[in-house]
Amino acid sequence: MSEPLRRRWPVAVRMAFFYAVSFSGLGVVVPFLPAWMAHRGLAPTDIAIVLALGQIIRIVGNTGFGRLADLLADRRRILMGLTVASLASFALLAPAQGFWAVLGAYLVANLFYPAQVALTENLGVIAAYQRGYDYGRVRLWGSITFILGTLVMGWVMPVTGREGILWLTLALLALTASTAWLLPVIEIERRPRFPGAIRAFLRQPVFLLFLGANAFVQSSHAAYYTFATIHWQNAGLSDATIGLIWSEGVVAEILLFAFSSLFVDRLRPTLLILIGAIGGILRWAVLAATTDPAFLLAVNWLHACSFAFAHLGAMHFIARAIRPGLTATAQGLYASFGISVAVSAATLIIGPLFEWGGGVVFALMAVFCAIATAFAFRLDRRWDGGELAMEEGGRASPGQS
Image (cartoon, rainbow, N blue to C red):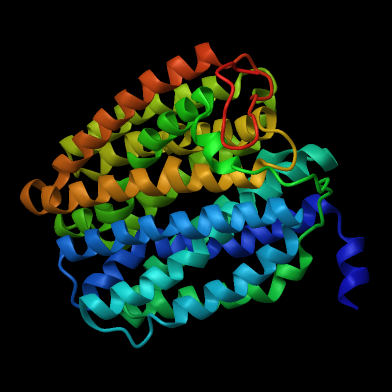
């Protein structure tokens, strides 16, 4: 029954549905899991350490499962397995009490769950190029359910308490695992092995600029994802208000994805990353200066820049600049070094800084976006718009294409 049903549904519909189901859990985990950790007895510095080490362990999962997907030329079955592993690993958090228990369970979860998200993005964008659908309009369904997850958690937490954060997460992960069979099969030619592919990527000058630009713009969200909810709670904002502020940013993200077809073919992916970095400077500067909800709502729509523009730029850069058969590896490296390592370092810095100065952490995030702007500008000048040239055995050509 399931196989004929899967084939009857258009690929764009199936991919949009999976984004919708799987990203609903992110809407709970990203803004609220630090609050759950605080409920389980962790101090702000403890939370920063746990989240930072989780980012580091993601390197293994993101890179390893991405490379495996390219070697086997099979993203669907690996992604299906990751949804089950994500559910099982997050269940380990249920009995965890105190720093060491939470840390151990969270590290296991970060081997699988971030790799699931990264491989979903790779499958989604490559399927868009192969099957001719609009990636932005499919991806926006993940953003919509991210909002719904955030809003629902904000509404139910007064009833369930912070313990409800984990139980809602587990329920949404179970729903994701049960619907992963709908994922489409994409055609990736199984080519001969590329010895030293990871080393070659990490020695390719243009790819390193790409990682640098995204590392700083994405790590600028570390303070937002880790301490924004706690910071605003400490300032007296209600859970409903905090949910509204978070949701505004994602609404702006949704609108950008919805209309992205108007500009993604006209603007270079590197320019999209540059726009994202510049928008982040303004956004974080205001969040550093005030906790007044009116001012927060006046700028938090810039999430459409600091995240959505940069994310679209990164996804389309990988699709256009990386040879077929290596895009999952590139996606894994982007998720590992362009996001996880950078966010980990930022998170370790902001823990003590938040304890000392609260919202001053957002001023540092504005500095990160200024650095990202410099990287993105250089990237835009260096990349010629073509496929990056790399050589087997870990050697990379110094040229752009």
